[in-house]
Length: 515
Image 1 (cartoon, rainbow, N blue to C red):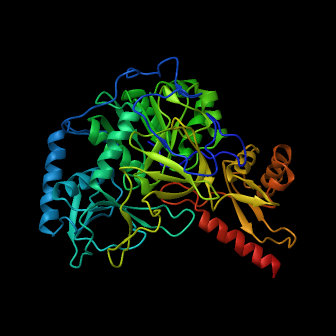
Image 2: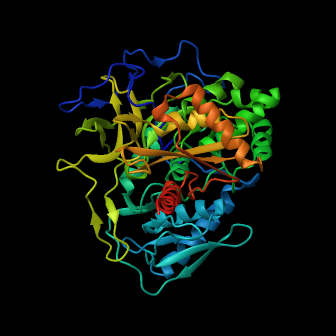
Image 3: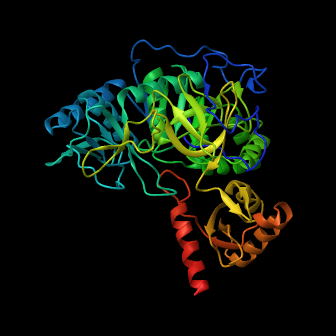
């Protein structure tokens, strides 16, 4: 259940199969059964009581089971909250084409908002506490301290195209955030296809310490709706709370971002009990940002169990491909979901996607119009990512086309440098950006900047250790030309590095130095 890729070095061989050709349409479509490949179903079942069971085939909506921040929400209470909220939304004028804005992050209010908006047929704007830009709704949903939703009407709602069922904001981690408009059929397909790939049934217990207003968290909500699994929604990630839930609630599936799993891996290295709890999960979904090979290997080494990463983006539903229990291929982002096709286009070998889960377009906050610019003439979504596809549907993602570093004519994925930086003592995390046209006028490529997160107050010493680590493992052209150490790296609301801010800092510092 993961909407961001694990990136791999550029250039290099494609793990898990031969790369698709660079010319002509390279298309792979997910099949309903494992295909012959170097990757595929494991010889032994995945740990946990649900291994080996068949994919769900729901015919009716199962009764919802929900626990919020450790407190069970009885089905009757949830139904009353949804009914009351739906009546309030209808009274405020929410309906098809007249949206509902989720204006808070409380998980109970978020779940109720999703169900109530669906009940009245209104588009759900997943704004959170501070929307990126204002799309005028018919009503807003806020929350009391206990998470009970409160409906507030709005006098001048924007007319939204009737097919729109939900609007997500992209993270804006590398550009201007955009409003992604998604139809109901796309949401339904996403929930069913993701549940089928991960083999989620009503026997599963899904722990979600992520915001429901982002595409990743909301995709887990759709899986819950499709299967009748028990959803444990948390207001945020807390290390001890997460481990307590794993120990006491029979959790079978955990979803989180790489930063979260880095903390869990460190705890597992110190505490064998934590390692056993993590290994006992059937699903360890990782998304929201790039899962680096180093983190994947570190987690596997301390727990003996893999992370199940994948590839997706808000514009595609979000999930496109997933590594699943018993059906994974390290070095790839998994197999395409059922019904999803992918091809490579253009000189950059950009990944293009066709799927029932695709967005309708970007919603214009001022006019309500839909921008279809990201689509090709024949209706495929241009992802902005580069990669490779095997004939049997295994996808490898090598990074954002606009984030790839080009130094002295050679291309390099930022994650290669970031992994080298993280190997230095005292480094908690790292983000690398390239600044074109650096201080060396002879260098026509990027100047590599490394931004380092560290709790060590001696930033100079940390920077020296980072430089030494990079000299040991990176060729000269890949080593950072500038290293900046700070207590905390800037991140977006979804947990990704805010590369726009980082690039701005680097560009401003370089300009000042040049002057």
